[in-house]
Length: 638
Ligand code: X8Z
Ligand code: ZN
Image (cartoon, rainbow, N blue to C red):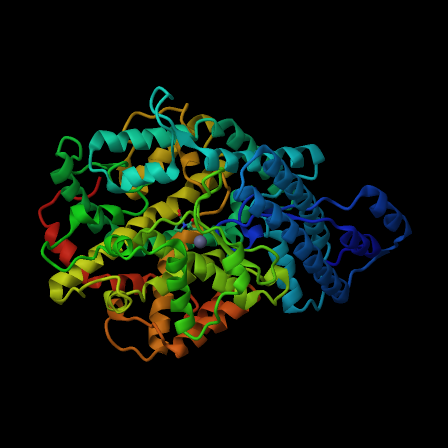
């Protein structure tokens, strides 16, 4: 296996290396996500690389060469990724042609660097005596970009430009009425309609209006697929989907099976919820609009993508006359503003003994939507300099949904703050699903008892009826999401592999939405539409399976935190608020970052080495029994 290679070239190239580009993504380190973000660095200029090549002799690389190479790459990447996420931050908080071009240029540079560095790293394959850290860093380097570019400079520039444009189209997206002459509404306003309106036609109008925003993305996306696939192939992957699936410390084929195994565990619970909710929607909108035995029209579930259904809890509430679970109303009544909501989130983390957020977090974050410019409102968390420069970027509204999202984002920030001293290649979650699960695991401790304590609920629901109401509300958020969490990348994996061709992009999207979620397009769609692009993570190129994994992992984490707090009761009643032992357990995992394969991190936290849906199933056991009763005699399924 030992191959010879020009050591001097490799090292001098590394020295000359320019930055990479990574995307700050929604969460984990900028490079984890998009194309739009941190991804590239320009390759070492030929003029600098050449002389080294001429001088160097072909020698066998040693483990020490590999170690030095990894050290250098970490240094380069820290510099490059910082430049990248700085440009990305500016762009996301001020979308203009200039900030887009600026970000694209940095991304181009980062992509160039990565392409070169990864190829160089391949020369260490088979080197004897590599230490575990170095070997892991070389692996992480190879899978570090969600949008790899080919070495062709023109294509790299094209790809960076496309990525920036796609995210910009999403961020600037507005619907100005059917004739284009009405009042223009952005995603936030249209989402309010989806959440609050119970008028079939008003919902349909908001849904179709937003889904028109993504039509112009289609040719750009098609090209993004072609060029990034080429980039992935250059560094040895079959296609970009295979690169994404190689990020889980197991072969990509095994990961595909793993995701299906977990889905198989939770699908029966989802099916029961779907059946019950459909029957309630039929009562609201009529059997003709929501027929039994058929998929549910996608615009009736309170959310633009029908991914979480908690906004229509009022339509499905099992028992009327129980104490209200309406946190929105209390937030409004008590004039909670954005800062107060974020402070409430921080308080939960510090109650576990974790440190407060740095002062700069409060100075540099974007908490609310600026009135004077376009921004990317999709929530995200950042460490811009990979050095504890924590921020969130949100357009906070005083709703329970945003309170939950704040905890989610702070979970990312707490990961960052506990691993920022590691080399940048280790500044990631154990896998990306871990990163997404931290804040959510914390929100599982936001029980009615806790909410009452902080004055956001007047009364804690009691007895069986209270419990079922509460579980229904949670399930409408957590369980409803599962199939959506899985299908977004099922679609992209097929697109990247070429199994789905551009002429079938939209059709295949709806096939998967129906298959997994049991929802259908509310109006006829065609290949003039590009409905996947109406979901942020597609134009922003952020892999999505992480959220599916996180929905399962967060319950596993919650169970482990409760155990370390010495809690013995039913999982759904546990809150670790204020428990320092739980905090220590959490911190131990956060500090590991990506320095070890994820089963090691999972074991440190939970004692288990496998992802396991039994915790989410345990948690919802009372509701599941209740749903089975309710659904008796119903024509479930679709
Ligand atoms: O994108 C996010 C976070 C940022 S990582 C707000 N989430 C997914 C989504 O909004 O679609 C959190 C839940 C799923
Ligand atoms: Zn996130």
